[in-house]
Length: 559
Image (cartoon, rainbow, N blue to C red; front, side, top):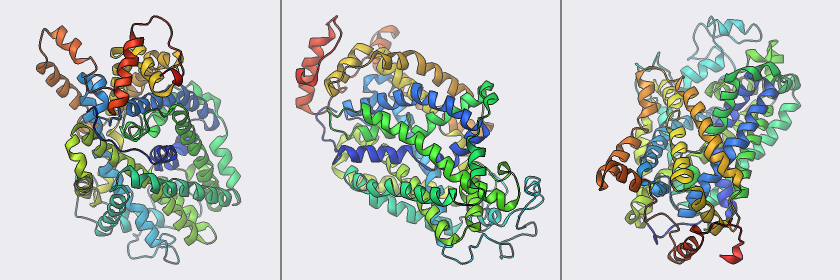
């Protein structure tokens, strides 16, 4: 791997925006606000922000440093401990499964944008050809909906008109062609944006990352000026301190931080691998989690100001109109939008923002797959455009299963299980590889050589003692939600790569089992900077300081 050509960002701002686009996604809009109000409102921010500081930021810092130092994707980064390299392949499988259903979700905003040009909005009323006898335009008594005695026009538009949803996952049904063609449009856009690698992605993110924030500003200003908005905002932030005594609230906070930032998925590692070698990534590793969490909180104000308006118009408590997941984005929010003046404009604005929030995540997820493979099979780099095209074509073909009548059921299954085992395992093995087997002293020397900044002991304490415990808690808590054999298959299909590759590595190593284990956990000869000149300087620097018993405090001028 050493000496292989590697792409670089045009500027470090491109790197920062790409990571922000990856971390800030549709989950910030439809998951965090619901979790916050359900788990004590403002009180939920205490475990949320505490987990951000003790787990989120340190993991982002470690991952981005390892990727940058070795210019390595999610597979090659495990050259730091070849025994764990199966975790890199697990991350690739994780991303493949995730992009299969995520691409289909991104076809929904495209369909909504198309229908938002109709006046009146097609989900505003019953009496359409797709509506059933249960359809009722609700202006009050939301208990009827909870009891399933009636459905709303927004609900029937989403589930019947757009998705033609089947009764269950065992009834896949045929392809829903409008969804299929929107999926095609989504993949064409994604391919055109990433076909030139980070050169094209780095320029596009200036628009796709910044534009959603402009829209959020507009929606926030509009939202807080609506009647009933502050009722919704107070419902969102008013603290219920008793909730902090419940372990589930702390587990929800840790899980949300963990999965929203993206450590363990391979995207952050891949994006950092395109950095300049001597870039000081500490500041960006703090900015990315802070902006991600700040966006989640801000999105909560945007969402609940509109839900407060909808609740006042319907004459019901805010809790009866609040929901989580796709229902918030594609049923509840369209309901509120249809009550606003100029509903078509706000509907188009909202769904365009939703599309850009999701498409940024797709850019990085697909690039993580491609970068991981190209780092292992460097001979394919000369034909990266072809590799990108074939990757997109294969992933698109796999995603068609989610464009069927049973597609939403498949999406629910994959989304609920795909990361619950793999992500904590990958993060845990990264920590073991970097901090335990490679060692804190070697890691500190590498950080100093790369950034000119000594590694604070605080990071080692968090990586070595605090985060492993949090990972164990998160894994235990998440696996409790696994349901049925299909859920366990989805959860473990990627993780199985870890023991398979470990067994293969041990079998190919000579000596007793203890000797094989010891040799397999040593950093491989490929670990280190890929640029020959920097690599030689690193070897000299490493040799000078690895035997030193004094603390490592040097500036870049000494490197």
